[in-house]
Image (cartoon, rainbow, N blue to C red; front, side, top):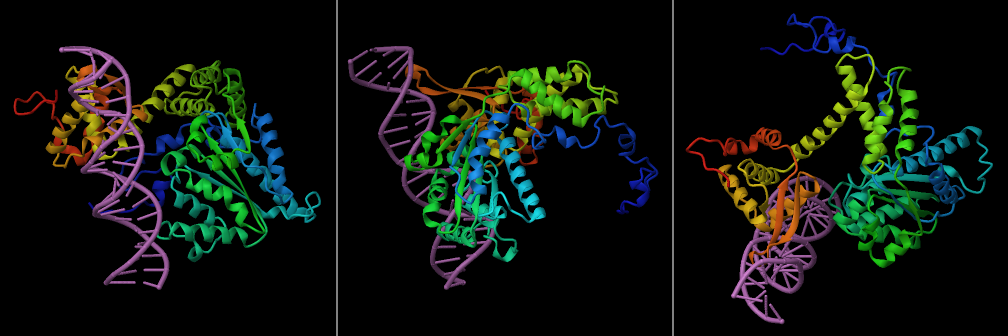
Length: 445
DNA sequence: TGTCCACTGGAAGGGAGGGCTT
DNA sequence: AAGCCCTCCCTTCCAGTGGACA
């Protein structure tokens, strides 16, 4: 069939050139329960006020104000579990600094901070879960100071020393105070060590005009144990710990966002309370509370309901959990999929607890069947640990005395759903139905 | 109390891939 | 084109481990 393109009529929701009604039409005509921008319910949205974080905002602002006077603020380490507002507070202060810069430009007075041009305060935010290498972090910081594509540090190819020198030169081009935020810092340290922190924390001794301050954000209080003592002391000049939100605080946060996101009467009684209570069970995670409210509303919209009720919230809870698992499985490399597949198949065959050796022999059978060279057992040990970290399996080291010491492995996902999902992967199509009852098939045991 | 098993997990290094410099 | 750098994925080697058992 010839491709005919999408004509203007389609866009208006009229019948397509094939004579069928446009697939989006019915959805576009249905009423949205959101008042406007649904991103208000996304964790990345930074509201005008952050409920129950005034104290942390003030503390951090009192440290950061030094930058506005042209001096170097102390380095800060911020700790707190997921969804406790760490990133939101840092982003909030970034917005406040930018607002101050704008007001300053408009008034052209620069009265309050007259000795230093506050336009020269630079805020560089790096998420170390995304950029998790020494090179990547340095490159990203350095590239914040150039707009010309030709002058950008390439994403690979330069020696580290050159990247570092280039970064220093760019910062030194004019007198400025650079505040570098390293979010999810523990991920960077775990993966690439502390050399990037070593360089960044001693950079001030090599700068003449400019100054650099670091704000590290981490979920893990213990990650500083892996740091070189010099880095640890330079980095932790100030420390802040963000406590988890309780259910009442989460309810306030949700109520605040809900006021902006919905018309009155859209949310049923107890919807925000339930979202808050469910999220409070998970160490007071505001991100989870907001996701629950947003997904509940989306489910209500799809069901063509005129309001959101607690049933939608329970559905949303299940959906979020399932989506997380499916996403995790879908993005696994092929060999990890085969390891998980072999664990699930053996569970299907009644084997509840497995050892590394058993999983490895099952995996080897599957690899050969799918025409791939199996990886070594050492490598598979690492893949098993990764699956454990993703929460797809439970693996704990256990000693069986004379029968050795190994991991005891159990799956922690719905077996048949995930088996079906893995079987959708084209690259391992040959192992599909490996465990069928056909007499010609071998069975994993 | 020493032995033994079946691994665990750290360290070192190979090599492929992507890109820069000379 | 050759030499170099960095990252990623992987292998190889090997010391260490917990607890049942003789």
